[in-house]
Image 1: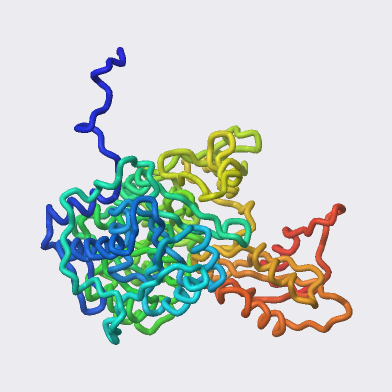
Image 2: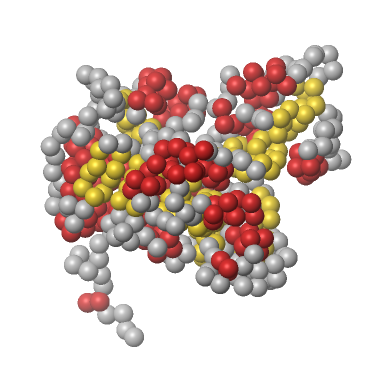
Length: 534
């Protein structure tokens, strides 16, 4: 077929893909439908649109325009959800900051991202304002409904209207929509740039993969600052479902919300599932009302699957990275598989599965880039290619080029592929510990430990943990002339690291090394896994 000039794309038949269209459809197509529930407040899609418009007006009034970075540090509340629409609506870039980070890291993010302003909820305001003050960035405190203050940013009481074209500022679907920071393999966070195209496609993929629809009532346990809630901030709106916001993880509140709102879907780290199982409020759960739970990080155990099933929860195991807009692959159970013994179900759900419809192509390859056999035994690296990959790392061209070497994104995760196509991760080539859904850099912890005068050498590895998935364990080779105790090191680390990054165990020994002096971490992993004391 000839490529004739009159067949070129036109303004009438080509618009940049952007998640803003999901909200535009909702506010015009079903403005009275319930959109957001939080505490004792419920907003329709029309009212949520007004909240988005109020935030957009606030941003413009404070000089935010196309290309500017807006940082938000907040739990799961309506304004945090609104920021996923208001910030890109003015052509700006949303930078959602992990509320569990320490002040030094937040300061680094604000500096590196060149943030224009910060919006923080009351719980995060003290930390955010301290970091923002050092970075020279203005900060605004969201209203506390229980104790409003004069200077609070109260977007609920502002009467604002959305423009007719929410996507007017989006001239290219490759425009950045978000900037998310991840610890990666070093202690210095990398800024992962998301584009509108990838956000749109991954959101649609999640709608299809998780079966979201008009009747969806999604409980926000997963933090919206984690890969923009795995793109569910946009996916639930695309489906026309109800966002039920919880701004803290409390098992009793989770169970209460599930019953109150007849929740159909939720997502969380495995540690939250264990919290639910160990809380007395589980007695209020009606298992006849099934809830689909998406989880990732640690593989579900037989005991977890059995107990969650008895409580009426159906698990889906997801795999992805910050660089891939969250989920890339998923593993659920077919109707036939759901009838199998729990041990067999656990084996299947431990796998990372296969990609969902709009996600990246997934290749398991050897060191030469050749696809490995689908035999469930040959290990290779997971390589990705497709539309739901980051544009690159902000202000880090070298790391971007390295990540996309040879035309694919290198995850650093080592896996096998089973004959049925299922992917199963066997190891991680990166020194990242995934604990309770948080990425922890072992190198960052080692760097802190090496600052202690009593430490000669330190190595940090992951140890499996039933509750957290993985925990950091520190192996210390002390200096012979200085006394050292676990308590000393724990106090030292607590002053320099966020709480979730603290090693759970400190083991003292001469570190095993290769002939060239490299620490043999595989030996230490075996010790940490088996619980052997050196």
